[in-house]
Length: 182
Length: 193
Image 1: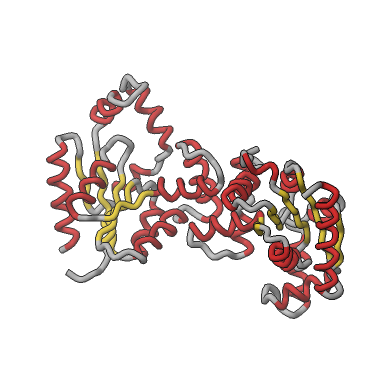
Image 2: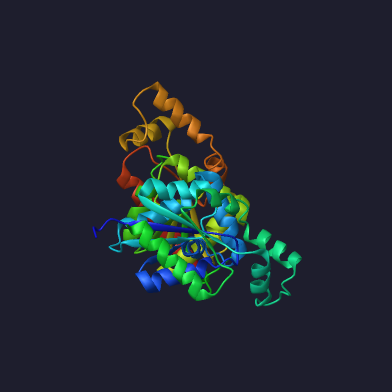
């Protein structure tokens, strides 16, 4: 295989299993996991601001407001330039601008991870301070601020339903990676 | 306000000046003479753009003023104080003071001294041209004048009035350096060093 870089973008609603998927790609395919949250953490540290979800969200939005929606992806893509790894996983793509920024950069496969409302409620109920009701889920979704995520489904190269077991998810992911590397 | 715990006994020299007045030239000289740390408020903005891999252009820098609206007007100050703490020098020179709260922050240190450095607009334009920031024509001059009225620049003359010492940088550099060093030394004699 040539040393061309392949980017796997993962999108999906909160609690659909994006991080699980990314972790699997790291352990199974030696992918490099690139997270927007880590970039925001660096910036918050520079600004002497506490690294919490609220500050990260505010910082992300103001930067997108002034430099455009692709700004964080643009910065993260630069990491791929200076890295020998062949496979990169971008977890938590939230809108078309971010996806386009990735696509402009080279071969990019979007995997959309889907999970039913019931499954997501079940997963939420395992988190602290939550009973996993439908209302809890709505509030949780709102707090994540990923309003446009679902619209990315139509651009996905693969959609995986993650209502099943972890090994089913892993099996599906492997199939997607093999196909996209072909 | 974020404050380095041990840092209150640092001596902080604040330098206020418009674009092309020579504040960084002066700061660089003083940092050598007094073995001081040299920081600028705008360096935080440059750091941010470096992390974001964006060009450090004037427009990109000015846009970051939005951070003040989201995280409060002290955001840059807190970041700067964190840097001062990490830098651990006894004397610190801070340039690029553009807002009242930035000067107020300098004043919160037990030992502090504010210098205002000014030069006629023509001289300042001349220097900025030499740095390749503006075209050598009337359009370039108009642009320079316009930039002077940006939110980041308009408070500078007012802040200059509150300085402990005023310098005019329209003659030779050496005499400006000497005047500044004398002023700082005389402050240090009065305030114990």
